[in-house]
Length: 625
Image (cartoon, rainbow, N blue to C red; front, side):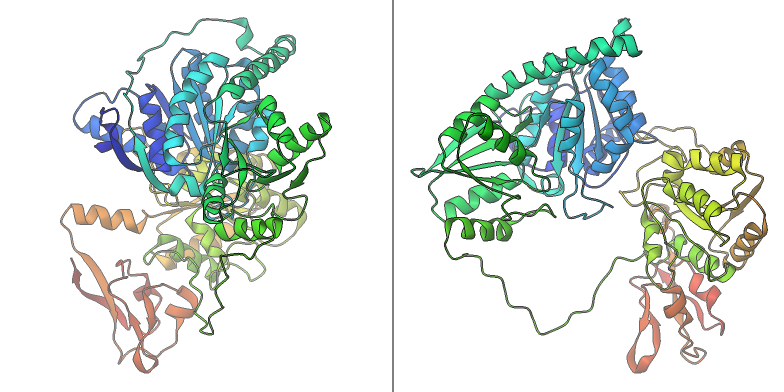
């Protein structure tokens, strides 16, 4: 495995996420934890792949790794390892830090012992997220040292060096990335892999229990640590000033991925500028920044999302009495929306430097291409569940939903997603709707979401006797982020056997009296189960159990089994279009002469189309290898 090669100086290609894993290995990582979330998933998945390869050989990978129940638990597990003197890494997507923030904020007061890197993978433009929050605010909010890489190699180095920084300051370090950095592939220079520390030792300390009297003592200590961090920031190799050509009064302040766009455009446009490239962005090096401000007549600040650097530079300029003109978000040259690209930065530069934008916008094509929205996979059991629900539920039913593949139920013809806030919100909002309206309510969450954040609102529903139907779509994996395990699977992230926790056992333990367990591929029985749940007064839970079709077929192939595909008998087919307009399997479409056909390359053999066809025109074809 190339990522494990201990060959200092060798260059290899890695994703930004993989580079972070490599940096942790080079630092001698002991414990890595996560709850999977795009765009951070490959960091943990790479740890898992490495751990599994060692487990198969009955060898110790040198570190412990787990997919935790949620981000808060992941942070707490890793923090405990740090308190014992071990090096730890916790990774999550940006909204995951919201879940972990309760522990995160107090953790900074308490401080760490062994180095601890907390990766927050932000998602400008909401490629796979419900918002595009800028988690640099968490560094300011909690007083956390923060590093922001611009390239995969820098991500690897910041991770490696970040452990030393964390131990020097006795504070966890926030490594803030963005989707473009996480998923770009770049050249990495390997350094020596340090040996992990193995087992640590927990030294008791009353300062680790922040009751109010202790917390009041810890806050000034945290502020002193941040003063020390600023001195480190002034000397950090990740903060530097670069002269391009013969600077003529213009300076550019930038960080993260935006730095790459700036450098490419400055070179392409032959601009004469000074560039302040910030990699340790909290605390920013105020002396360096002030000297930079003094050397410029105009400063352009290029940063995605919020004007965090811009606001700090403005305050510093005011403090030193500088009249420097600042171009950024407040001047209208850059947007607080979405991720940047060369076109966006070039457009702003052309207005500031007053020249024609060399990147002309291509003319809009007259050919209108059909939209291709994401859809549930052919054979996905969620589709069968939704089909059964729509047959059972009144038209006025409200459908709170959650984060996962099943959120795609929002699209026609299912339209089973009316409300969504965050992980676990389906059941919580269902309880609120039960108070606010007399409409029927059926909510949806996945099995991983159930363990992550779905149990507390179910307890709330039971305690207050809310009249709701809560559906757990149990496909036995964390499907949306790459089929990672969770407490409902029988193996863990290291490939070891683990205790499988049944959703129905937990629900029963929560006090739910009406529990329906169904196989969604038996559509008639599933429909009847939802009807019974709707008739029950009080909280009821329907557990729709069927494995993700991709995993089920993968396992069949591994066992040498064949996968059946289905075909439509054109003589029997009455073109009622139920399979297209109401079931909407992507493998079923129109053929020649408006005939309805099944694409056997897409068909995954679930057979649900045969069950819903009122004319018995769909049946298995020959087995697909």
